[in-house]
Structures are given as structure tokens and as C-alpha cells.
Image 1 (tube, rainbow, N blue to C red):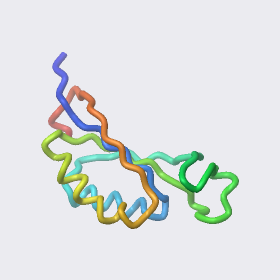
Image 2: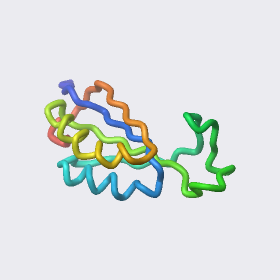
Image 3: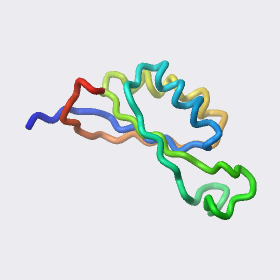
Length: 103
């Protein structure tokens, strides 16, 4: 089975910014992504959970996409200006995919 190199980009962001982020990904040429709810976590502001939130009532989302390695910089450049001004965490990991033409 042929496996192909790819980059997995995961962005944790305030739910209120989710649509803006996914619009930027589409504009950058990302062919697909998944959006997942984040039920809680801990960071600079301390521990939080979706159930116990009063402010930022919408919570956080995780947006995950797979891109070809040569498209990574364009993808990160497209989302950085928005993430620089809002709460968010970006991680990039090496991965392999079976159908490279989808990414």
C-alpha cells in the first residue's frame, strides 16, 4: 500500500472565530477539514470546561486539516494574522495518507 507524506495541522480556537478560520483555510486552497468541539482544557487562563463557562459561552473548537508538505507555509501564512489576535493554538505534525490526490 502506497503511503504519502502530509502535514496534519490542528488549530484550537474560540468557537466564535471558527467560520472565519475555515474561510481562510478555503481561501488558502485547503481541500478539506474537520471541525470538532472541545469540551474543556487548561492553559494560560487556567482550567475551563464547556459546561462551567460563563464568558465565552460558545467555547472552543478544534479544526483539523491535512495538507501536502509544499502547501504548509501557504496555509500557515493565511491563518496567522487572525490567530495572532485571538486565543488559539496551532500544532503541525508529520503524517502519512493513503490517497494523496485528496490533499
